[in-house]
Image 1 (cartoon, one colour):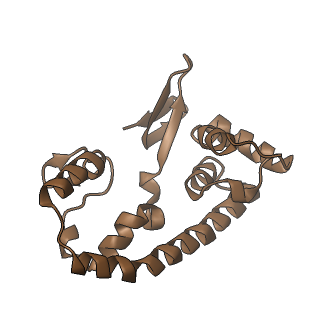
Image 2 (cartoon, rainbow, N blue to C red):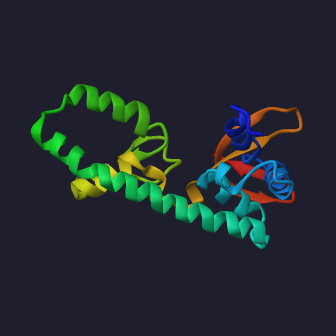
Amino acid sequence: KHREDAPALIDTLGGSSQGASTLLALLDNKLVQAGDISPAIAERIRAVHPKDPRAISLSKTAATQRKQEKQAAMKRLPALRELTDSQSGNADTGKALFNGMCLSCHVVGTEGRGIAPALDGSAAREPEALLTAILNPDAAVEGAYVLYRVITKQGEIIEGYRKRSDSSGTVIS
């Protein structure tokens, strides 16, 4: 039986290597189904268990799910393109949204945090590619930019992008 808080629990477990192992055990015991696990969590599990057949299977399922999400986003593009062509925007509102949402992770020139891919040159992209990146940013996320969650020995939860992980610990930014 699935509970309403199952997605949050899966997301929390998927943020650590111990949690990734727990999710695989839950899959084995049929307490969680592969379809319950988001593509991002599936990739985290695969990063922790790269040779595990269950993790490989989850990764393949995630790739299929991302493809379906991309197709759904692409179906929305003509209507959105028509909307952007027929209406003018508000530059001040757009700048505030961009600064608050995009630059909290990305960088353009010297502005932004720089923990996600740089957005320099995005203005030169085709409108469809730009809309796809906005509507479905995870469609082509690079492995280096998967968000990880680390739980310290003191129980503190830290999220960020994994820079390094070895026997001495994990470094995230």
